Length: 155
Image (cartoon, rainbow, N blue to C red; front, side, top):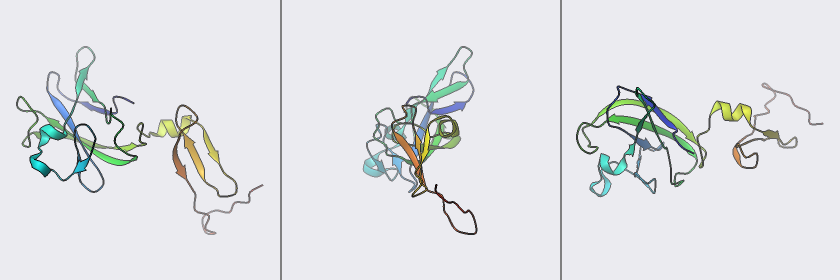
């Protein structure tokens, strides 16, 4: 996938994003590993994902969450910084943040969940949601069948 990271900001600026996992560790730029900020003397320049301004008139920036497909499925925080100098630096200002649910190959969105194929196994109740290719399962959800919440009789 591409261009999962979006932000609107003043045209003509240098912006970059940094990705964090649920443990608060930051991803290296190539997505090869997560680590505590500053490990091995790494800084913002080792963690940045460059954002590109798109469209005429600008003010909308995009970037790839994981162009290398190294980041596994999960929930991630994305923080966007305004680059003050020639390179990303630890003192750059935060201008926005958000969350991405990553399937391992792309972002999981409500549109994808509602528009694509979903199949429920009657014996277990598990619902498998498929990617655009209708072959790759991107999420499996098993509803809780407690008596107080739902009654289901498979046919």
